[in-house]
Length: 338
Length: 262
Image 1 (cartoon, chains in turn purple, brown):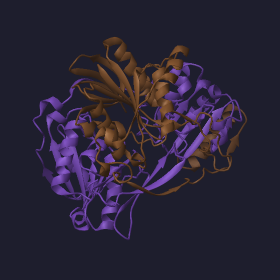
Image 2 (cartoon, one colour):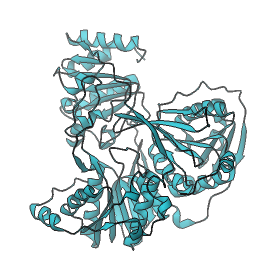
Image 3 (tube, helix red, strand yellow):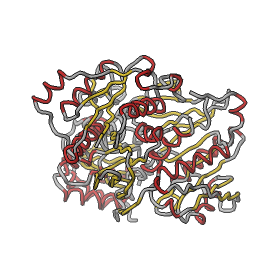
Image 4 (spheres, chains in turn blue, cyan):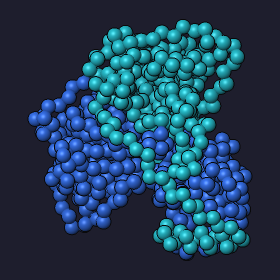
């Protein structure tokens, strides 16, 4: 594979963040990535640039300086409405070739995880998914990328010495967003670089955004999850109430999803989503391995179950033995009023 | 319609045990299975063929023993299987893997649709599907939860995302990555299994697919794993709370407030 010489590699500088744009707005995960990029840029004595691509996002793009961006490249185009992997990938590769960033960070969201592997292939560079740690090797300035594999059972450190840019994705809520400094200024660079190649534009026929605030698992700080012990769809109504009270999302085990009690979009585990929240409360989930691999990296795990010795109760930091249908309403009573 | 389904052989976690010390899964000694997401990709391919006619080709890259997942795919309805296997493919990262698979898809020729599982359960990257699509310069749709409509030139799919879904129409040829919601895979018949055991499975090497040796295996992989380590073990002392519902609730809320979690 074409590798870069030392001299070619030195042409690449600055740390880029690809802004997560959905429904015409820059999403909070972008601020978290800018925070991480700021630390890398400081170590490399370089700048943080953010690329904001979308329809009607120019005004939102200006807000990114407050979080630590020095420059923001704005590609504002009506054709970027909805998820358009091919168009965005092409635009991003053009920007990479033009400005030569050293590192490109992107959110490990559904959108980012579809877009960025396409970019990495087109730009001939390496990509590490779902990094939980990013640092600069003091010896040669390479990006050291740490990521869990095999459902969180191994942590691998990955580097990409001979290719630039070095690309990585990071899940929402893994990095901490810096406090915004509203007075901070930066430079906006507007780019009109989209192709007119109409074949490669998807026709978005319908976009459905659920009105349920308890749906978005990847962006949640707290997840209240239910399993077979919820006994039916009514059980999940209780968990939705619980989740809304604590500002969390509702998760489910495969058993509950397969029983039809709650849609698949809520499934956590091997064939659902992997989550890494600050708090995970498992209600009536026995803890099959396939579920545990999807949530074992959460910071604090609470299990509520009648059966005292399930794998979930053993893994939990806090295990409550009892009837969740009695305990959860009591928890709602005890929680501080919002 | 000519459909290629990409499959990966992965270690099964079904019968894995948890290490009592670290509270993490013991990986050693696990048997090999078809990546669970790929079973949905295969089923969707077979269903499309049953509706539209054509052919489903199961494709995998791996060591010689990976042939076993192709036989499973044949038993579950694939028409033929192809194994990419050679030392030169060893050590491939997602860039090099997607390159090799894309070259094999070009070699198969006249392919209308490639279907992959959303991600493999060992690497968890979800990069190979979009990577194949980029190498082929085809269109792609990731996290597909339903195929709404297909004709000779276009496909309409429903994509799952964090806050709901969308429906989009794109030109063929294209690459899809699919999630579990898309279907319920069938159980292979005994007859299917027997036929699959007898099938000839060709093994393709780099020269068979016209691959550039510099883009294969470790050589062709921009990323290098420099270190692997077990993650920090979870704390091993579980706080147990028992009592009346109200006592349990109070104790939990106290614990959570101590940790500033609520």
